[in-house]
Image (cartoon, rainbow, N blue to C red):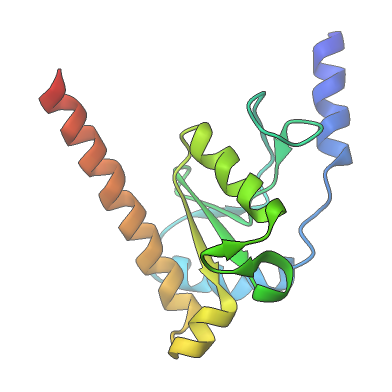
Length: 141
C-alpha cells in the first residue's frame, strides 16, 4: 500500500462518526419517498478543508451531488450567527465548490416545518442553483 494511501486510511479512521446519526433516519425517509438516493456520513477528503486531517463527514450526501447538514442551535449556534466550528465547515464546503444545505432543527420547529419535507425542498433548491450556475457559465463562454 502506498504511503499516501496509508495516510488517507488513517485520516478516515480518525474522523468521528456523527453522533446524531439516529436523527438522520427521519431525513432519509423524506428523501426515499421521492426516490432520492442518499448516503450517510460519506467521508470526503480535500486538501482545502480546514480540519487537521482534511476530512469532513457530512450528515447526508444526496444523489452524489448535494451535502445536507442537520444542525441545532445548541451545537451549531443560531442560523445566521453560527459558531466558529460551523462557520469553518460551511466555508470548507463553499471554498471547495460543494453544494450544501443546512436543516436547522430548532428553526424548523419554530416555523412548524417538518424536517423530512424540508430536506427534500432544500435538495431541490440547491439543484436549482446548480442548474442556474451551469446556464450562466454557458452564457459567459
